[in-house]
Length: 239
Image (tube, rainbow, N blue to C red; front, side):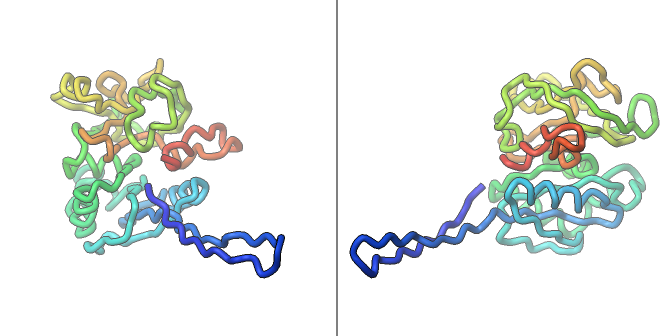
């Protein structure tokens, strides 16, 4: 995350007079992709603003994405979850732009449906499939921070326990390369205690090898202020 600061110094007009520098800080600009059926975009924008970021909504049909410092793909039910969650969104024009920003090493966070989309396009390992008990699951969950090497979890201590809500019907994590994920420190969050959807080894968030692309099923944007029951989610946006 970068900040551009312009300084303008003013010399004293009289002996002993104090004059201060004026400056302009350009807040990091975050891209929020919007698909038909996205419904968490405003919550994500609010969380970005609370973290000192400048969010910008971009429609699914845009392909050329420039001047963004990061991406947050919000939750919802893109294209009504037809075929499977994230499948249709994964072949829209904006995906090519997102891939290009990943090549430029811009951080990417996919939340819930955003996580499913990242799995569909192969930017994170594994996939998120129908819950072990096939119903929509909406509840608060205790989570363990399995790694803090990502930009989104660096404010936490490793193995720290946090509280975030979940809301999904297709959030059960599965991979055929679990040992590789462990060896490469790509497991980001795990359910602590109760495993509400039957995810493999209680995994509910993973990252790519670099740690810059992170997919998570819990909703940090819904836990950014104490009035909602927890502000643990705000750190995911401050990173």
